[in-house]
Amino acid sequence: MILVIEGISASGKTTWCAEHGGDHVIPENGVSADEPNALQDPGAAAAFWAARNVDRWQSALIKERTSSWALCDTDPLKLHYTWGLWQIGEVSESYWKLALAATRETFARGQIGFADAYFVGRIDPELARQRARADTTRRRSRFELNVRLQDALLNWYIALDQALPGRVHFELPSAIPALTNLEERYGLQAFDKMIAALPLP
Image (cartoon, rainbow, N blue to C red; front, side, top):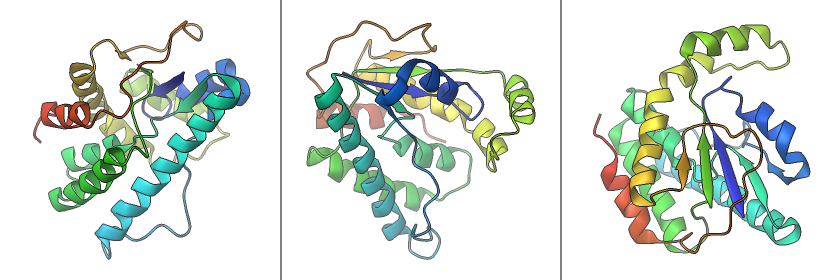
């Protein structure tokens, strides 16, 4: 079983994972020194992040095979981030389309897929700001950008819930839920249905 915990910065997802996941947690991708510049070479940047997301999914599969379940701190299929940036005007539509094409290719090859359940935390932006100010252990350099992305993040998972009904839950549970592995992890038709359900900017 592969579970995903999602939400913007300071929504509590990493804390929740630390409290409930132990060594089952697959951490979020951090900053990478070899990341291509999206402005100078958008195609390379799109391919780079698609590959990094595949790496996280493969790590989750390994953890699932060895320990029966994995808990991902943010979705390995993190295409929602680029889509959200397009929604708020931070990247171009052409870059979004490059990222979509690169990710769809990894999906079509069965290199990345859908988790068995998604738990998406919502948070009042002012509460998130208060938490961020109180937490001196993390830099949160893109915090305000994350706040602006919350509506797009929620819309992404609403679209995913339309494509795969019942797999998305808009709250963080009190404990690891009792779930079973679902058959449809690599359905390209479901992926395309999710993308088609996304609202236009």
